[in-house]
Image (tube, rainbow, N blue to C red; front, side, top):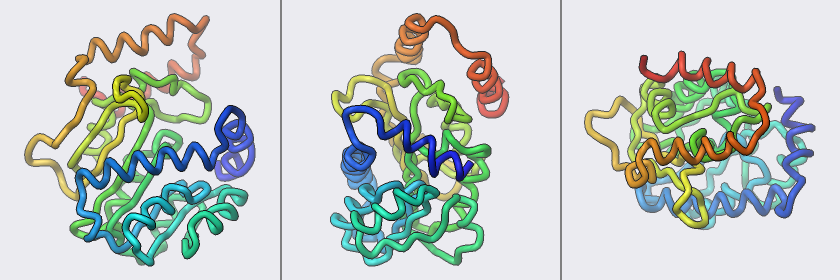
Length: 252
């Protein structure tokens, strides 16, 4: 998997109107805005990002927080090199989330953005992250929303809906402190799931900012249906992924 993300993945991602670093800078600004709404940044003294890419997100958080302890985990050698320039002082501590197991870190914030859907076992990954955050630490997660994003891609091992994402988080022994389902520009389309996770199972309803609440689940499903109708076929491999996801995370 590391070989794939070191080469082909970045080659494909580099195509289009935005460079990977420009795209990540925009994502980082949005995630910082969301985090500020739900977490006192003054209590954050250490940040680690899994899939730190070109370092733009960590650079945004460092400018806002001023913390000296910034860590990155990134498989791409090209991205690792660029991150050293974008975020001076970043310490690159691994190439895979599994490297967390050998690190003796006690982190205040772990960021994992558009990575969880690529992994073979997202519950295992979240459990490992939960073991590396402080008692008041948080995990910031963003994934594509299957009902609003054309996320049926070969690089994605899991296709998350709001329901399956919540069940995945619960299975990892975490709770959702805040969750937002929208795009980053118009705030109208249910494209991404962005959530701040806390240690322990939730005892009360999370502070949720769902476009799902406004539009309803049927409305979100309609967004995806319109996308599917524009496609000639859905590959059998994608259908298998959806069925596997439903068996693992959706209630029966």
